[in-house]
Length: 188
Image (cartoon, rainbow, N blue to C red; front, side):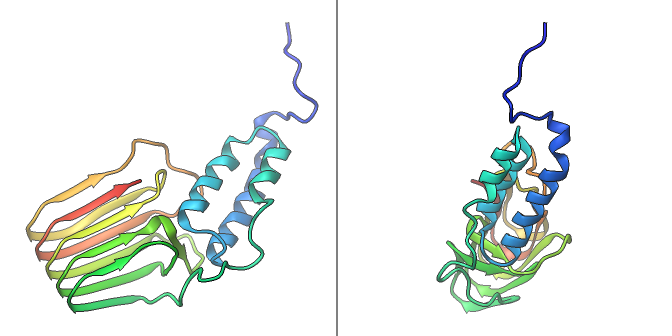
């Protein structure tokens, strides 16, 4: 007995070229600031779950033609604070190599709304150099991330959701070098 498929259904493997094309469109959109890392992750997951061309078209149908208002300020590769915190949330520009330097203060980086401003295949690397202060980084669910570095007095925690990696998402490498402070990497 064979099961009849709807007229627009195609075998999943025959959609692979269209999936790659759609994924390329998403990668260009995130590189141009039209999608945040979180939006890109969500849409990439839909690309690889799509069962027909209509579902693929729906993933990119509402892509903004240009970056949204206030999408990003020019991405800075170095964030510095002598005494005080560094916080980035919402929609903000993130370079593939970013460094935060603090004497006393905390670093909070929420990458769910970050727009990676440079295209490429190399990992997104964030280096944090701190004498006294905590570091917390949040990545979207489905993004592969790692926490490395050195802390003299402090805890390190990685709390990533146990979900499969979303194809096409960049690897995020967080390197924390601190004398006194905790380092936490989580997804959400």
